[in-house]
Image (cartoon, rainbow, N blue to C red; front, side):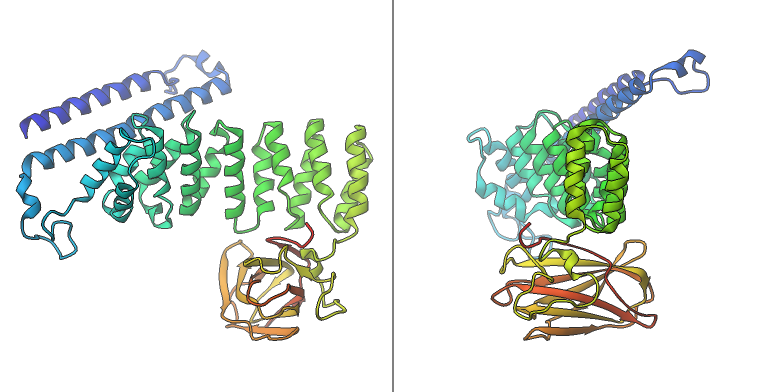
Length: 469
């Protein structure tokens, strides 16, 4: 016991010294710093800050790893081998309740050791670690964050941390970010990103701040898409925000390719901001405009043509001007305005998803001005009856479930979904539709939002997919 305590003190002292060494390399920001210190290049200062933060993060994670190992050694020195067969001292589901049972820590130890025998490790041990994960979070997080362990082991453990409940466990989130930002560990970083996306919540805001520190462009673009999908106000809002801070032309062109046109104002603001960029970014913006529809798009394109000189960009703008005034058949924007479909079995003037039995799909509609609501009327044609959930978004972008259940429609026609009057004004409505509920396409002609302040038809729309796109 004394030896272990002494070892802990030595380790802590050594790590404290390392922190001091790292800190000494940081730029001096005290009031007593020499006047010429302020002349340092901002880029150099930012790079030094990032290097220092990365070093401190590595020290922090390594300390967790060492502490976990010392605690395991200390427990082993106190517990005799025959304790495994001792009567249970805790509830019946305790690992010691049955003679010969194996502790969670031992399953983790065996799993780690199995990578010395196989590149993939022993799957049976991994299954036990997954089953006991709640009691192993700290050592698992320490392994995920530690370059001392093989990448495949760290990757497989990072994949286990893909649950929203881990958002409250700071060590888990820290470990995943350490793995995400580590260089030269592609599979591990991808697994860390996938788990962070599943955790969601504040981890997504932190991911947005870390985007431009991700070295791999492919991984960075995957992370951008995670941030876009998580934005409650719509992906184009996030594209507009990220475009303002992105500096790499390839990143900016990628962001432009993700524009969906909902809300249209955000998409147009991003395209407008690109008109002063490098020619490759302008070309990407002109091509993105060709995927948008409506008179505001035509007006923006004509304004841009007034000063654009590059022939490739002008050609893309000309194509965009022609397509902007025509909404494609079955596109989400066909669900805007009052009902206008002429058929009941199939009509290109209504929205339809890419596949007839495409599982869960969504159609999102925007209303101006927003209004308090108590009823949504969905005008359905084709294989009606697939609506399963209706979500409303207030003016701040927060979502509220308005209705959940089984669509009463068994034939084409309007389906009315009622709920308690909202205390907030609804700006967007998302219909979640089970397109596999019936054979053939579920098509939506129009969606009316109604309440104490009146009723309105959608002015803009987007969807999880569009037939023919």
